Amino acid sequence: MTGPHVRCIGEPVSFLALEAYALDELPPEAAEPVRAHLAACDACRAALREIEDDQRPLPAFVPRAAPSTAKASSGRLRLLRFGAPAVAAMALAAGVLLMMRSGGDHGDHRTKGREVSLRVEGEDPSYEAGTLAVGVALKVVVACPPDLHASWDVVVFDEDGASFPLSPARITCENQAALPGAMRLRGASDKRVCVVWDESAVPSTRAGYRREVDLPPERSRCITVRAVPR
Amino acid sequence: MDAYTRYGRALLRKAERVLRNRDDALDVVQSLFQDLYETKRDDVDLPYLYRAVTNRCLSLLRDERNRARLLAENDTSLVPQARGSVERIDDLDLLGKLVRALDDETSEILVLHYFDDLPQEEIASVVGLSRKTVGKRLETIRETVCSLQGAPS
Image 1 (cartoon, one colour):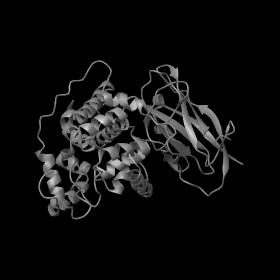
Image 2: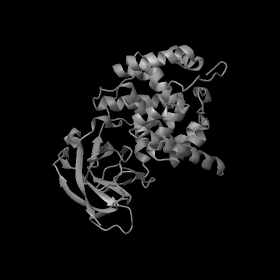
Image 3: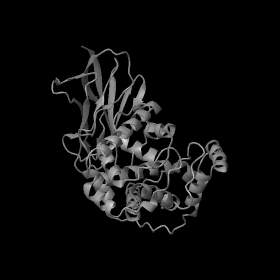
Image 4: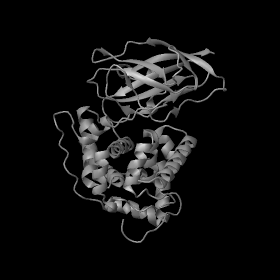
């Protein structure tokens, strides 16, 4: 942050990669190009030097026994934004406009002995109960115990695999808690729409969710959304 | 906690870049580890923690009261100079308005691109989107920046 301003010779090495490099946590195949870039780039070398020179004492972390009341966590709960711009979601099949019908629930996943349920609603005022038109903005609504404080993610499975149409978000659990944002379903195949929740308050690891069986049964719930020709 | 000792400084630097406030950055990092402690989660690596810090910083910035305080205490020395063609968003007020105008996912992309210097391929990998979609989101961010800069404050 001091000294003459120099520019990277190409695409800067990201701070995440620099931090991992400094910690010697990059795998060899990733470390080698970083090393080569650093050898040639004054700007990125300076950025790495700042990381390595930052030896300030790290304030002690003493875990509290009581539940966290840190403002970052509480702030997140206050700041959920419903009605965020719709998110186009799924890989597209041919542009055949279909009607989709919400199917029955499957499984018997529970949390803390109480039911978590899920449904998908159309945002369109002309939405007809029980039918969901392809392309219509849809909201995911869950019913969950009020003392369940978790981050929620939506996973949609079809023949193309898994997709994640919404951003993970924390919600205040109640009988009808809508996840922020909306999604649009396309394609001619049935979908499995699932919610997965994580009480750890950090983002879920999506990479492991390739099939429905990959979801943790104690922390997920799925319904079938069936495509019905209009 | 071993992860705190190992990654704490890296996460502090990351939070400071976004928030420009050492105390809030420390609060973000320690509250994250408090949550990890409470949930007995220790299978975390740097990319995972980096992302968690991003989300917590964005939550702080979306809150009006936090944003006002951060603006008042704005320590611009915590923002490193841009190394590449991507300029930093060095106006904290603009950053606050952006994260309130953008959806969560696009806000995360904003931080990854403008503060962490991640290239589009890495952003796509982190957020689970295609590179093309990431490119569209970056265009949305640029359009929103123009819109906000043109609008009266």
